[in-house]
Length: 434
Image 1: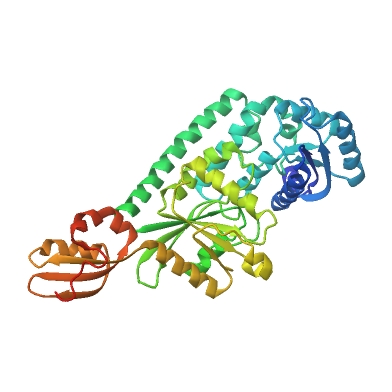
Image 2 (image 1 turned 180 degrees about the horizontal axis):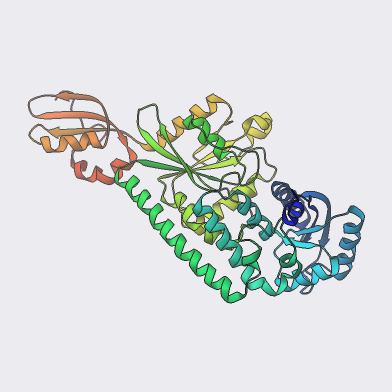
């Protein structure tokens, strides 16, 4: 049976030259690190990187983004290396894409479009697919005039997945209508997700969210902590849709642990907006585990990126534990130099001892400490509150009083502790005999 043209073109390997523009005294080092990440993004999208071109320039050229002389250099590199795609590390305007395509006779992709393409490849659930399509169309709409060759190419490769050729070639009015339709469908999904979150809150289940830079090891930690089947892959954005599992702590208390989509520097605004309902899992959690790749050469910058995204989501004030993961890939000296932001845990998710340390750290954060309550014997109505507030580890009784030693649950204490605050015994106040 004869193969369709689409199938043939889909299997042509894309070979790309990466291009970046940088400025400032520290621009070169930052650019090198960013280009390394861009290369990993390209490889994640299934593109072979065959060359790189950089330019130091105070400001982008309005017509080409890079200078005209550098455009000629890129064209020569394309011819020399046999490349068919050029990926820019920065975001391009529609006009710049059109001008570069005419000058280079190659597909032009920017960083945002590349990230959107990876999300299109990896979206599996209905919500994920809707979110990716919304982000792609929102990105495409103001750039329709500059999408010349990208829209006319048959079949695909990076930058053309997701919504599909027929939708990408429609006019602005059609795309705006589709965006409105997607927003309506997503609003229904968001209501459904919100309902689930509210149900979890009503049951009093403590919720912990794993957040962090992409490929920091969040999914591996979830798998090892809960001993459940969780998809793990050593690629950027292996997890798009939230994955929740139940974790039983040593005290017997059960919590819900949720893995979330990884963050990345220069995360497209349209993507953050489209995935806001997914990212809300972090905002609704009682505790955040900020997972950090300890071995990354740009570890501190990655942590700042995560902090910025959490701030944008309104989750910056959430209680956090910083989890320095992949400790097995660090030397002893490097491990000693890890940030001392508190509270923190240093682990390797692949070593059981490290995972147990993390479980203990989570349990310690749940505990509000050890308190003593002295309840009048005639106030039996208060006793259920004592047991709700935590684990009773000791009690003494006489005719007039009952004294309880309680390891409190932090969440319950914050919610109902005020109801029996008058009976809380301060240090040194309890008599020797009751």
